Figure (cartoon, helix red, strand yellow):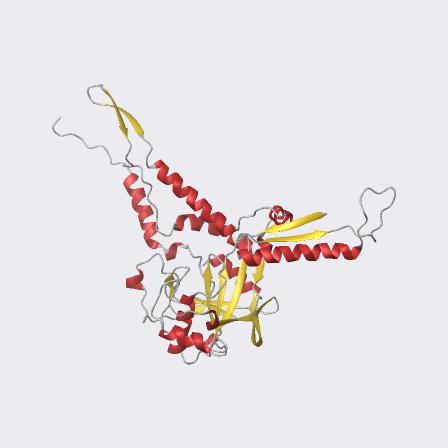
Length: 378
């Protein structure tokens, strides 16, 4: 009996056995038994079943798996999900960093009298490498390959509500949106925040091009695909609906764009009446607030189309990304802004982080050596 299995992270094992039946035909000159066409179809169906079960339990997309990983999953080898791999890498780097702090450093110097001095220290004095809290330099370098992910776009269609509106998103907008990093029209309003929450101005965008269009919701990017809608998004969406009565709760959705490994995943959600009431009264901004339930939202259907073309609108005066600026001074909830037709600048554009380039110029000025001065007392 030939067995092919898939071992999941939670210990469950899926075993599929295939026995050689009595009705299988074997020629005298053939070493292996012949397999009919329908039996090949069974093999393909079993492979898809194993991969879909692994992807659902480990929260990954099958399109993001490599051929070697697919082979190992089908053969029953232990495969660590990408999220757990990143966690293990982070733990290894943390252990290496802690170990490096205890290393002894020996320094050999010579004083003005020509005597050799050898000093051994075990403290991390003058050995600490400083970095930003968000590690934006590494993310800025890795963001140059984001455009490759549009070749593998995955639209989450599990447990969607069949009755209701279907949302169609143009592919040209999605490709440009991936290049920006972070449905006919996407308006980039002044904003700042993180992958968990975002701060937006209370005023809605106004323009002649938007008069014939109706608001359909807002889009939130996140580095990892979540199995449910984040409670922070429910709270933010409920407050937008409460403060802007022209937004229809039955039509306005939350579209999440997850940058999964090697691909891009899109999921659309709509709040239920219970979710709207909970988010409107919620004051807890933590990751696990009290009273949050999966019944507060429901998935809706979304399609990608090449037949429709969309456009972008950006702030007329000033950037749309305030993450690298004085957010508490330059960006406020009650700020007034106007929009225009145009392509949004990249997330790490120089106009979005002027303080970084000022620091670069100051560093270059300090490297310039001063000219020799004449000693008047010589």
